[in-house]
Length: 118
Image (cartoon, helix red, strand yellow):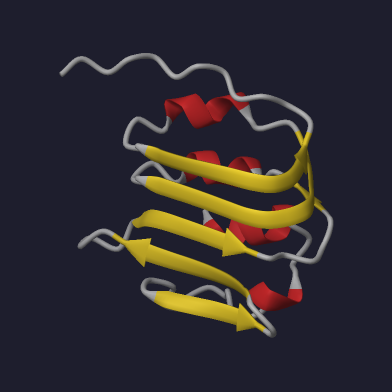
């Protein structure tokens, strides 16, 4: 899914090391001065946390994020050229408990997530 996401984002320079067979878990990809992409994974190697900060390229919200079925938290900070709608499939990420999206140009609002029984 990460390679699909990279393609949907237009193969940005900061993700050039994302290639088949590369170990992504626990690695922070930097682009000076303070842009980064960080990925944390479950014990089985599935993406559980994705953080993207201070991106400087234009892109639409990648639908491939919806394929990260073990995603627990998604943080997108200061990406003013991220535009378009938030894909409705994000509601299908049943493990997603923390969603932070700030300083973007997304044109859609997020629908209310259904309450999860305790």
